[in-house]
Amino acid sequence: MLTEFTPLPALAGGMLIGLSAVLLMAFHGRIAGMTGILAGALRPIAGDWGWRAAFLVGAIIAPVLVLAVSGQAVSFTNIVPVPLLIVGGIVVGIGVSFGGGCTSGHGVCGIARLSSRSIVATATFMLAAFATVYVARHVLGAF
Amino acid sequence: MGRVVMAGLIGIVFGMGIAISGMINPAKVLNFFDIAGNWDPSLAFVMAGALAVTAIGYRFVLARPRPILDTRFHLPTRRTIDVPLIAGSALFGIGWGITGFCPGGAIPALGLGESSAWIFVAAMAVGMALARLARSVLDPRTPKTA
Image: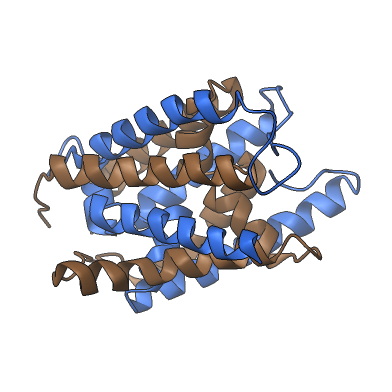
């Protein structure tokens, strides 16, 4: 299915993501990586759980707030069948655990710090995603 | 308490950025990766905006002696480019390409009440638990994921 090219909301939203990364470092001294925050929240350590849970809850209620403030529904379309969502989800969970981060942690916070691990990780997962979508759509003809 | 409230507010900023940018929409993410098809370059602008703000902001923040609500900055210390980093990142990219969901996009999508997001996040949590199990079997001294 087609999606519309939306450079300005993309840029503005990206800057908000960056702002949250800067604020989390400024106030909590933490990398705003969803993988690390989620992994820590799923494996609670006393005194280290509250801020993680609060960040996650904030992130989850945010789309509702966007709707309330703008009056416009947030665009969301899933085109992937459930079995592939489950397989893909498990693969993502294993991958980000061993890779030590995802788009937010490596791709934004890590590259912003010029971390060589994050630059290599980001190049790797971006290339893998381009290749996977190419194979899925243009070789196998899936979704 | 202040730490928890502030983290919640920062989480809201993060989630609003994900929602407004379009990163929350798996169809849009998949079209970003589909250069040979219905290419939608929007997500390059998301990354550019996020990186510009973070790179500049970090310069000022990390020049300070410590964060406002903590005693030190918790920064990753590992420097090695190793097999887990590359193999894990490649797996993540494959899963991202199969589904259009990444962790930072999928968590805010839970708030939309979309069943696909809940299914993805549940599967991802299973994957994270499997990885932890595998790590503890392979090497009991492995440090936890940063």
